[in-house]
Image (cartoon, rainbow, N blue to C red; front, side, top):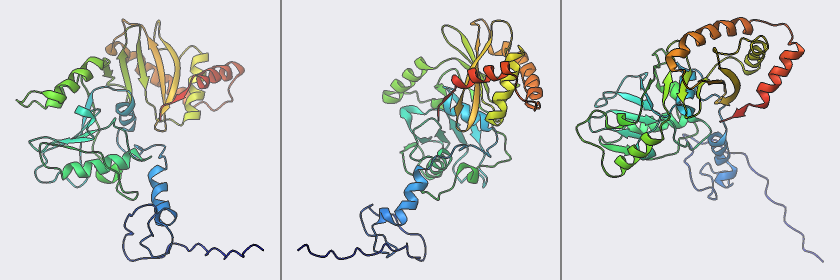
Length: 323
């Protein structure tokens, strides 16, 4: 006769405790005293917060389209950051950079300046929280030291909490990564020199349009491109692009063509093919004229025609998601 099994103890809810519950090993008893393992108690919420994807991590920051472009499109660029509470003693400036030597998350120069790398792999689904954690650690790092990768607390601050949301965000695109040297007399050597050489050789010539936020021209061997990060709601934007394409108003001039779009960090990025002879300066006036046509198309609320629906289907079929 089989033995009767003792009933399993009922799972108990996490117990309220005074202060923050410390992080322990996943299989260790939860410090809250519930009797459950940490991963099944307070660790569950922490793990969920760490892995949950924030669809628009840069929403609410000035220049959201440029943040997305610097994260996904631009090889070499920097932008000064303004902290909400001002700069700590000994930190003359904080600068966002697309990439840093050796893929460091951040770097504090000998003179106390702080550089934050944007294109690094992040430890959670919220890039804004990860970058804020890196920034806080960089501000406390000794001058002349890189900042190692870390893991942000699930309830830690985000960039939106640390940056001055009234300060402009104005990126400067560079032809290479010589900004790593910071104008210092010391020249790059060793691993940093090798990293600089590799990065410079792989950098695609890129320029930011002055009259269109989030619009970036780039040069490739076969043809040039314009990639334009837009904040309009995706469905509304695709309808407007389809209307313009059907009416012959989606191009940026002769031998240019709207070829599709992709998603990045919750925003839609239309892409145009351009002739190899078309420079970033050549794009300024056509882009401004297109922006006016797009505004009119976005204000149209009539149902799409059959031709417009086909154009929209073509755009969506070629759409990809980067993040």
